[in-house]
Amino acid sequence: MIEFHNHSYVAFGERGEYTRFAESIGELPTLELRIAAVKKAAEVLGLQVQFGVKVGHTNKFKLSEIASDTSGLLSLRGDQLPLSIFN
Image (cartoon, rainbow, N blue to C red; front, side, top):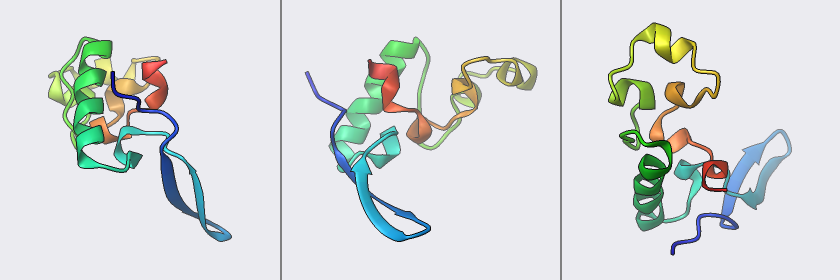
């Protein structure tokens, strides 16, 4: 089983560059990990997931359905999905 947590990510903030753990699929360090995470996200959510496309659009939800989604996941692109969905 592939581990998606505890990968370093170099971020930029008010004080410059710093390292923290990756928090989203797009922050994973390798293409292979990102592809695997998108596939796993699709399994976990029971929806189609594409890396750079909003989940709601990929699955042809109406805008009103996306807006009323209390989790907020339908309005995120696949690369923006939080790694916390794998917990």
